[in-house]
Image: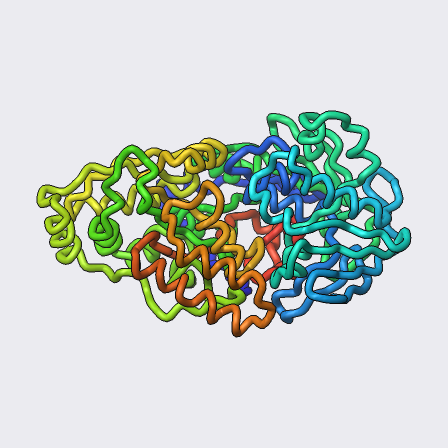
Length: 514
């Protein structure tokens, strides 16, 4: 992943001079970086609140047994100093014996056993439950040695352990007696082993602080003493705070703001690859009240109506460097090998398809959108209108969006998903075609997903998944529009560096002062 610094241009004219604010740099002396949070969250816990922005924090707060170094393509130590796969269902780990939790409690194998038992408990309701229920049991061999045993051979087992399993402080968690209390762990009691610890989480935002007893690792870092994620859902308010010194970093800026803020001599722009995929899903299965998308011709018309290149280059910040995915995965995603592409831009063809489907005068469509990318939905609606698809936009915050999606309320919706959270095609097939997120009900895709999960050879697994990925395009189930680079505007005192592990994520441990 490369970090791109935009050129800083002189501001010309009296009118432009009003735009140039003088940010306060006192926060550097306090060793705290403040940045804006787009979508407020209730807890810093990747199990109960698997939120894109909580991941910025949880990945530096919670310890993992091992991690995957995407830059060098290898697993690296975390809380485990070594590991081996005994047989297709058994993973053995030798743990470090010098690690303490933020609470001061000693880390042992019991904390791993307890965490995995908790998240696998049928009574514990969490999103993406299937990510964890493949584990049958944890056997403790000694205080610092254990085995994780799967219910059946799982090709991505070690990857799931690396990317998904974040370890609780069992003594602290046990003190929360009821399930509702335990669900608040990431707000009131969060204790793990990462280089940052939680100080506070309230209606203003989340504050974390460097943990001085962190065991040390070249793969995790805490360059700034404190990081404060301030809840400011309105982007214009975030921009005002950045310009007047209330924030040091603004994340996920729009293409218009990227161009505008780059002209401010007090600010810099940093753009990074993200491997977040932005997509449009269409209700091919007819789950919603409006059944119009059950007709493949209508789905194809919608896709043909969108000028993808213009959309990306004009409205996606950092769009010129964004990968244009051919399916629901990226080139670097493990076992991603589609042989087809989505429908190309063809507005005349879109009109013909609508007429053939019985809609010569077009259709009315409610297009739902995840709130931070509403501006993209508005641009898409402009393209759709030209072919007769009159789309109205309803933007939703994450938790409302997730609830409505699960209830089958969407005829069409624009979303995005952080594929780097576990960059494997199995994970993406599960996300798009699993549980209540499935708006397609395609048995061929489900069969390929099940077969691939037990194939350990990556090349063979890719071959199993290829027909399923091609089916997505053949049936025009969803439109994989673009990678969404993460673009930051920040004060000139701040440097945003490449993450030590991920080629597609920036975390708060990647924020530095010069």
